[in-house]
Image (cartoon, rainbow over all chains, first blue to last red; front, side, top):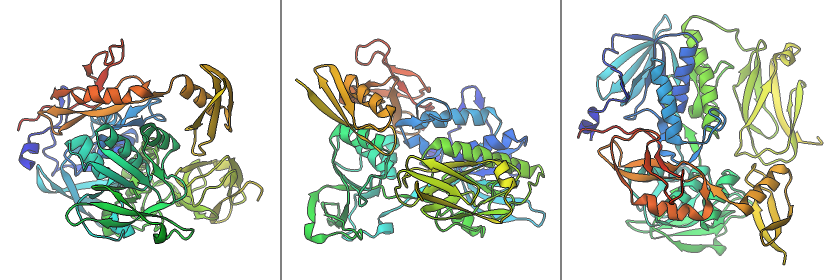
Length: 440
Length: 125
């Protein structure tokens, strides 16, 4: 397979780019990951004025997970129109190529070393060039996230084939042209699971049901309606998979309603015939590389701890996209990564912004907030997630401001702008953010 | 005779349960919505429920076995399955360009085309 792929050049009509001769070259910014986050960061870096920007991607072509997300719904914020994943990716790829960003696909980053003068040496295993050391001033981490698997929630039972994550099934169906099975059950009501339910129905599979252990769906209402209800697929809330049966292949699953403590009530269990179980049970930022660098991670987000310039605890190393925290919309990833790229570009040019002097503390009903600290001299956008549903409610930022909201749900990220004039009057070093009932 | 339809609003995560009363094609009353979006959605769903539709088709000579495609306009909800069947028959050969029309007037209706969602180059194997 690798021989076949070797002949491929990623190209735009009339514009071939040659990636030979990288080894000797030094870069201003190297971006690790060629998904929407990486492409946004590369564009941001170019915008900041640096010339030499490189994207490293381990897949055979850049674009990331967007390439397998063939449904529409991308780009409403950024392009003001509904695009499918591959369309969104291709628009960005064209921008990136037009902007003279170098792309090295089929290249896996196996480590980063830092010289005494702060120069980073990125060690790359490349399909075309073997092992290469790329020198750079700044690095942007945008490796994205991966799916939680069966092991993460420890579903009891045998270990037959036919248990796989929804995103993997998506790649099988939408890119490789293979169906994972015929009678399919889905555990977890995240958006990928809902979208795969519809997708498999359209491809002629039978979807026997979507099971969610929480009393509400984790996906967008739009997806519940258009992916499940339109196709008559049942959604079983407060129900989980208690056992997987089958020797070589999944034969059936046992499902059971969950009680208040979220444990399955086995006295009410029932069996469901199916040959495949898809898991849509959450995403984890992919931070093995960050960990190998000794970068400080936030245990809640699973991503790096970042300052208001999206710089990690290692100077000159920035992070954006789903490797930082899992986003709802690709448009938000794009916005964040353009910013991270700009700051990385600035850093490469020797610009040092004032160090942040306010630490953000997630308070009542706030699971996390990113970035983790603020400076006082400019406007900031804080992304956060709540712990439980609250409606109506208000966000309180220390004693600086309050903002009313109609509702908060854990599945939807909250965005909060903080103006510099508010911070001007603030003299503390920590700022606590709470989400409270409206009358509190 | 007054009949009622039930919908769940997709405007935001609250998902208001909507109720639309009608006599034949005439809408009498919409209730259950918390904001204007709900009323608008119920009306749209009653008069003409439209959906985005995208799928994949077989492609040969390319890096992948499937090419993502979409119908360039929203189509009526009841036509989704029919569309899936028609498009499923299609076989294309690389190279294909983003936006290239693969089936013109897919339901025999002017202006509704099936287009490619990405560029796929020809790969020499």
